[in-house]
Length: 339
Ligand code: FBP
Image (cartoon, rainbow, N blue to C red; front, side):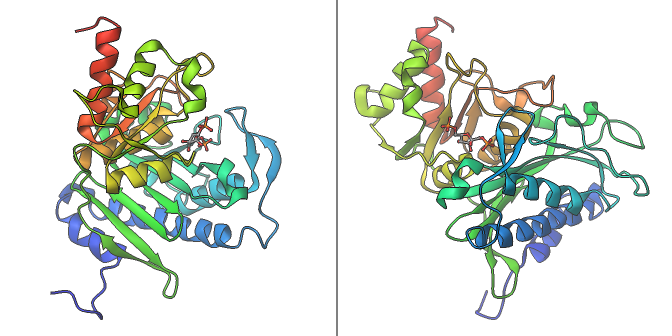
């Protein structure tokens, strides 16, 4: 029985879970811990963002053609430095870098490939809204030495772990190795992530829907019909929901994971393949959603079954409570005349 003096640190919990992954020989444990360290450093900068010269743009543009925030650059470098010297990682891919990030000379490449969005929702930084770091881990396919794109371009079904860190009213790390989804809250007084949400499961249907409705006019009629269902226009099949949209995937996903709901970023006339990146955003969140009893599709296909073909490919995303995601797939299939 837990009492006030018994705390479950991230390290202790992962170690206890390790028994469930015998062939990872503790390396996955240490890799998750490396990511947690990087997140603590990023959190310390975000917490002081308004006080130190780290808000605003870095006067640079990333591979997505987006203006980089100074904190984007800081978070990207911090995660790479937390991972590139440990002997656990053979290659990294970041939403902020055009190509694969090699392991620096002098360090030995390891068994895992790591994909990450160092600071998701970064357009929210200057307005003090929640942002996050998203990561996914897979075993390498190549035999030895520096990793290759092949190690990173694996379908989400091959992931061994995924998670995010949300920098909100508190800093939380939420991850899964396929055995449940667990949340740890950073206790700033001791600098440790402590178990606060064990075995998170997401309700089958939820009270929230999260989508940027300003894109409504650019959606297909099928997507418009599905979202109207969430407005309450299809009471026979689905109850109307409350709208919540922060414009930060991590924050919107986290709310819906805990309270139930669905997040959508459909394709539209401007983002014909959707906006979100398969490797750094959709796959890790889909892995978590499914491990918590939810679902994730591109409107019809299961996200985790999509075979990646390029580092920065985008995909439409419908993710969250299983029945809400199914509702969208059903309506889209009906309107588009698919079985
Ligand atoms: P970044 O990773 O570049 O921040 O982009 C992703 C994102 O900010 C998501 O976090 C968010 O849900 C979405 O884009 C918001 O897009 P929009 O402003 O078009 O609604």
